[in-house]
Length: 213
Ligand SMILES: [Zn+2]
Image 1 (cartoon, helix red, strand yellow):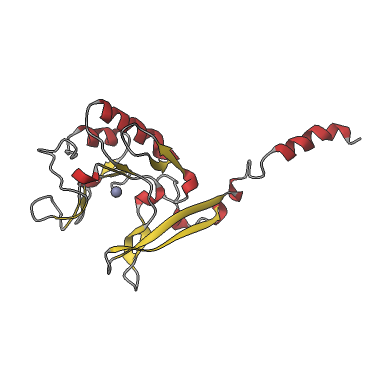
Image 2 (cartoon, protein in one colour; image 1 turned 90 degrees about the vertical axis):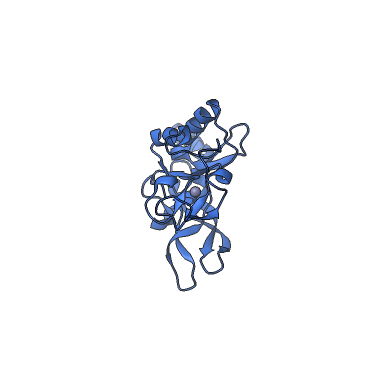
């Protein structure tokens, strides 16, 4: 009587326990908070919990990517240090970068996935409370040493203050991204917006993401 059931039982035993049930998987990531008082990263720690317990703020509503390292894939392009981005945007990021490099534009550094609360409201201790788009692996910084982040910069000019990376000088530096240049155009074709064109007091010339922020 039991014999017909044997192959099915064996198959079930051979399946890994997590197969077919994403809820059982763990999500893990290292994170920090940006202190607006000390102007540095603080509270570095590792978080691990099941995917089923992901909070709303741990998921990007635009792409569905999460802060979990399990959602990220590594991009290997020769000449650039490997970096990670979310699997949803990995194909777009890789093909845009390969095209750009093929056209002879220098790409010396790309920064992708990096989890940290560097945005949003400040709590009573002066700490930022919202995850950046790099936290979900949906933002990339390209050539930060030639495409700085500026504040006090509603429109770009000598009054803008460089707060991270190197000076943006597209008229003389081939690794600086011009507004009408190949890097900006190619990433826009993939549905990304450029941090050099975001509204507000900051201009983040190295930065590309689906929202520009
Ligand atoms: Zn960035």
